[in-house]
Image (cartoon, rainbow, N blue to C red; front, side):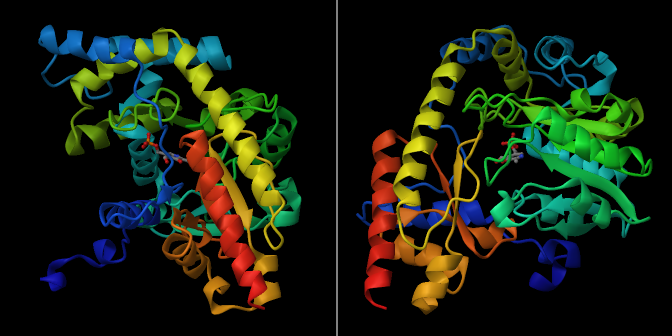
Length: 403
Ligand SMILES: Cc1ncc(COP(=O)(O)O)c(C=O)c1O
C-alpha cells in the first residue's frame, strides 16, 4: 500500500519530539522510571476560568460551524491584545484563528510559496518549519550563526542568505529550541537589512511571547520594524501562554491579502476552529494572567537550576542562556571530542544513550538541524528537572571515566 502514498507525504517524518515522548512513555509503562524532559508543553492544567468559559459555551449551544476566520469576540480579543500588549494596530479582518500556532504557520506558507521559493531559517530551528516549508513547495535556506555567538543571527548573515528567490524569512523569538531572544535594537538591525529587499516577507513566530524572564523585554517584530509591518505576518496562540496545547487555538495577524488567502484556504480545509475552544480562548485573552505569571516564574527557576547543574558538567556547554520559552539547549561537541565514544557520535545516539542508560528523555539536536546538541524541556516539576539533569551529569561522568 505504500505505493499509494504521494512522494510529498512519503518524505514526511514523525515529529522527533513526539517519537521520543512515545519511547519514554513505553519505558515508563514497562516499569522504568524515566524522567521526561522531551516535550514542550506546560506542565500545569488550563486555568479554571478558561475551562468554565468552554462549559458555558457548550451549555449555550455554541456547537455549530463558526465564521471561517473565527468568532467575532475572539477576533476582537486578539485585536485588543495586540493593541494593549504589543502596541500593534490591526483590524479584525487582518486576523485569522487557526488550529494552534502550527496551522497558522503552515497555512501562511501554503498561501505565499510558489514551487522553488526560498525561505530563510536560522539553525537551530523549530522542528516543524522544514517539513512545513517543503510541503508548501518551498526550499529552506539555512543560516548557521555560531554557537559561540549564542546562535544569534547577525544582519550580515541574514543579508548573505537573501537571493532573488527568497520569499520569506522566518523569525522566532523567544525561540525553540534555544530560548534565544532578540532585543528591539537587534530586531531593528535585521529589519534594516530586510527593508532593502521588498520581495521578502517576514513570518514572525511569537508563540512564546509571554514566557520571558531574566528581565528580557519582548517586542513584536512588526512593532520594532513598522516599515516592514505591511509584509510581516505575526503568528501566535494560546497553547504555551495559557497551558492550552490540547485546545488547538492559534492565530495569524498581518496583511489583508495574505490573511484573506488564508481564510479561503481554511474554508476549503478545516472550515473553522473548534467552536467551544474559541470561546475558551476569549476568556484566556481577556481574563486574569496570574497562573501565567506563576508558570513563568517556575520555568525561570527550573531553567536556572538546569543551567547551573549542566554548566558544571565537563564536556557540556550551554552557549545561550535562555531568556524565554522553557528549554535548555546543551551542546556536547567537547564531550564528543574528548571521549570519541560512538555513543556521542550523533545527537540521536547520545539522546538514546541518555534514555536507555540514564532514564532521561530529551530531544536530539538533529531535529533542529544541529547534531552537536540536545534540548531539555523544563516544563516538568522541579524535582524532575533536578533529577533529569543529575542523571545526565552521571551519564556523562561515566562516559568520561571510560576514556
Ligand atoms: C516555535 C514554535 N512555534 C509554534 C508551535 C506550535 O504551537 P501550537 O501547539 O499552538 O500549534 C510550537 C510548539 O511547540 C513552537 O515551539
